[in-house]
Length: 294
Length: 284
Image (cartoon, rainbow over all chains, first blue to last red; front, side, top):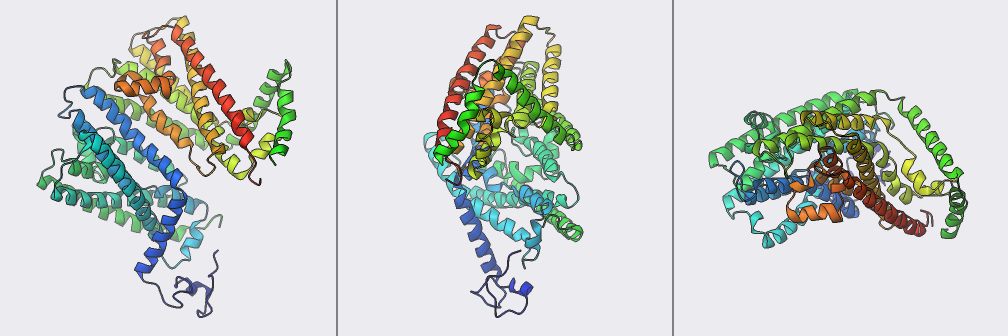
């Protein structure tokens, strides 16, 4: 367990954790300070792992590129369910961008924290471990977003098919939808990780969730191309909210203002629902945690 | 350090290279490796059922994915639904081999190089490439192989096609060649670890590439098709073997696949030797 670096001014070991170190002796740090420290750490760690992150990015782009290539061939010179080649290109490029911006890998970390006892020292910190995960996500996405925007801008310069309409309202709507989708995907991933309090195959369960999301989140095809019952299930559950909806807002594939407002409403509902699930899983789980391996 | 590692390896390679007993000796070593692995894995029998469930789930997902395309079109690159299903069976089989053999063995090369534990491999009296490639076996992924071949067989039945003994033999050879090509790609990729020690997840690059093997190569636009046949040889892995079974290609395609596999195995062996010479152990 990490000892405080120095803390003569503070009486007990545990309460030294309330300060961020010698710079703020004895004073509980503000949220801004805490988040800045967490964000900075995560950013520096990411910088260290730049090549590895680039490789994960390649994997993230491979699946949508394969789908785009095959749809491109299927569409040929004509249309598939209202989608011509260019529409598919726009859809899948937007999907790649939104997917990277809303990516959440927290399940793998949280599962390991719990199974291998790495949660122990996180529990004695004066801050809920979820904030560390949130800061990690913000740092990672700040990095990958800036890279992706450059990649996209270069691609769009040469390939008009992936250019997106310039429309401030649409961009603003897409921003809201992406932020909410990122929140939902983060919570889904984190809650699946917390299941490791009860079961040993939380990651296996998340794999199944990913398998279902291939269809229902719009990774294989735009939802309007799926069989109607699948598209309905995607909207009824959280899958459309976590990826397909922000992509639709961005590409403008048949989205009206009313439809967009309804979609955002659905996102807010599912964000709240998964937040509730998180609170329940965390409070129940942490009381039965036994700190193996610590 | 460089010199010492080289010397330590020398007696092993010398003995391995000497004459007729070599093959039998390596077969015995392989048996010993797998017996040890089997004993270890059998302690975790629940893994068998988890593996079974996951195999079934992903097979169904693959068929449904194909189904989504076939709702909009009657052929994918000229292939009908059940033809694509024969390919998906082969894909699943090769994926099973990857998970059973390649990922747990050669996939760990980066860690071995980074931590310097490759030293222990180099001091053993067997060829280091052999040791690094075959030490482990995750036996549960046999379910992927069995279900994959089962799907291919069922799809052939749905196509009302009974392949001749000759084309089944050619299929087996082509599939073997495909597996050898996958092995060569993994070895080439993981050998990069000797140059880029900091990159932990090199294996992910294979996963990204392998995504493209889920469809017949003819389903891709022209330039990509060229790349997947001649540059990143994915077509040889999952398109050629089922094509032989469905009669789309003659049995001589198996010979071409074996030629490609032989060349790639030779080239990667060369690459491995060059890379090993760079290895200075973590401490050095």
